Image (cartoon, rainbow over all chains, first blue to last red; front, side, top):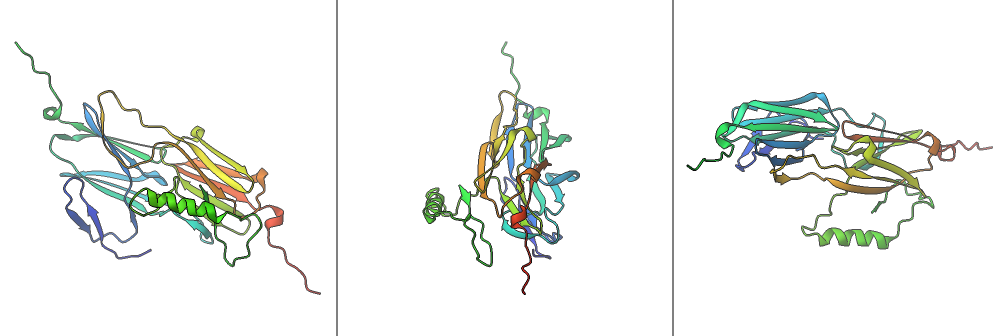
Length: 132
Length: 146
């Protein structure tokens, strides 16, 4: 486990790397599924091992920052015969474009999965145009 | 696919024989999928050993208790089940899909003889913990030297 490492975080959709010098611990980027419904964009993030209290989802200007911290999976005296799990905090940043109503965001956490609903502002919703 | 657990020092028990043929097939399969990197098994897991027991920890986000099954047979343990897709309303499109939905199954070799009556498992926040107490025969025993 390396401390004091700079972690480069890729911003979604822009490809611009953004470094976070304050990242002191191991970071895991959670997998995400993104779904678009007529009313909203739904982000489904896999964050197993996190407790609801330690999750934070922050909308900061054009970025949605999702964080969650985990408790260690094993006790101190464990001898790991097999190790695939990172057991590290989750962190992911999403670039939120215009057309999202930034004050209307819903989030739910269940079974280790965080679901964030970003409701579209009126201009993005498709509208039927009446033909006279 | 069966995962082989290496124990050091290498005093191998008779229960630990996975044919090299099977391992070769695993590697072949991994390579065939492109990039050359072996495809990650799902679910990812850790096996931790303590003095009196072993604990298997697996990450199963989005899986409900009733949708996961653990079975033990012939010195192996199988975690299987299904992760149901999140219900989406009509007229929705998937823009990105990184997670694993649908059925899964993974078999692991048991690291030692297990007291099957005392095995416990719990699933919380998407993490499955299986506690495997060592059978009496697997516990270390002192041999007295006369």
